[in-house]
Length: 137
Length: 206
Image (cartoon, rainbow over all chains, first blue to last red; front, side, top):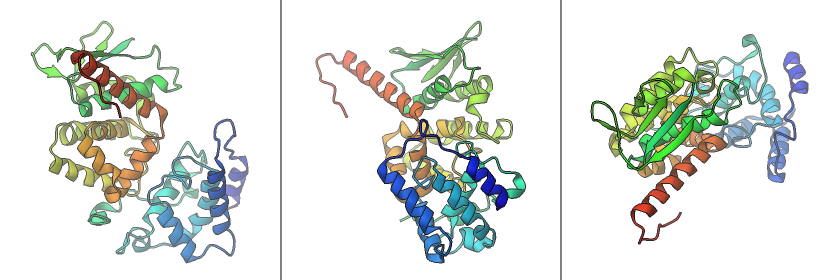
């Protein structure tokens, strides 16, 4: 992850372009510490998955440094996930995290400019019809 | 080359929003290719093509025949303003065209049941995707969102968490100023049109 860390330092969300409210800053802090070394448990991962269910970015729609740092921390964990863990099971797996990781690594708004080999492999169409029934009353 | 979009005030909003939002999106982009801006005119009359059919929208192209109808207008805009309307990493615009067709055939004018079926397919498509095509908003998102937004029943459906992926996607699109501004402009035009048509009646707001 050294390469990514280099990108990290150069990746800035300039204040004139992105203004964060106190609540958003608190959310950034919260997810930076929750996913920190020693803190990133299965339970935190499950929480993050639920948090991202109805949000494109950690803050909702706005990108932030939390997306970048949490991406770096989660990517290698996600590499070890089977297809079942990613999108399967009764709860649909970690699909919200997988979708968010793919957005972070590819979105020009986040601007990571990773090589293909550095990215988590995501087949966006691999869910197919499995999703059906999820959350549908 | 200059373009103008004519919008019939008689047309349902679900057939108007896709082209109107696309034009707003083009006009607000920073792309130097987008020059001059595309004008929009709300007209009271029907928009009638040479075969006497009426259409919700028409795109007038300088020194050329006007283009009628939502699908044809969207395809023309994709061809003429692809740098703005294609999704990043999209493959040549083919996928965007498929979703324009999806919008025209599965959403605009659809009944509730068949629209719900189409929304369910969209929800599945958006499970691991943030946008319909590629990693940036494209004309595919604009077309589908516009058709859904313009129909109060369909819009109510995607506001609920039932279709969580469509719901999340719609919230992202609504964070984009050019999209919300186009919707507001159409609503204002619709209101002033009905106020003009019924001068005695008060127009309800909100």
